View 1 (cartoon, rainbow, N blue to C red):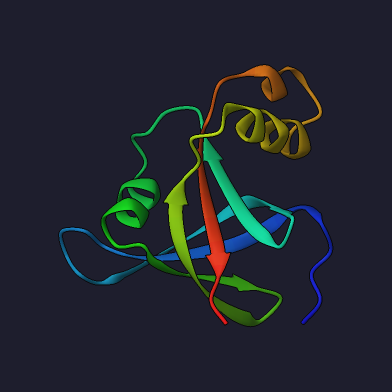
View 2 (view 1 turned 60 degrees about the horizontal axis):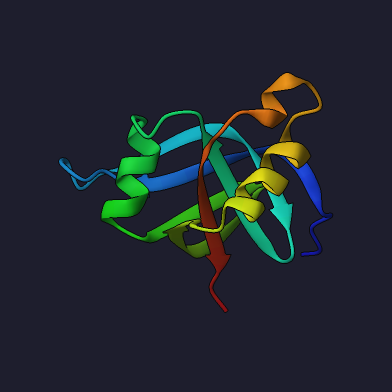
Length: 105
């Protein structure tokens, strides 16, 4: 499956850090340089906490399931680039917590 670079909606599937059950959330994602990026203004979302507790995640896009490994982006320039790709308004300048998902295989 060929994915175009850019921003689109997808479903991020994480494993609950407390329940151990799968948890799915539809969210805007940026696909850039072969990786998926999810971002939040604050680190208090369950999907982010679950992804950091159990780094094996899945992304559902256009009926396809992609397995991946999640990690927090430390590079502030990359975080800024992802925000600018995700938003075309003043939100693109806000500081964000960015999760990177590298596809497996």
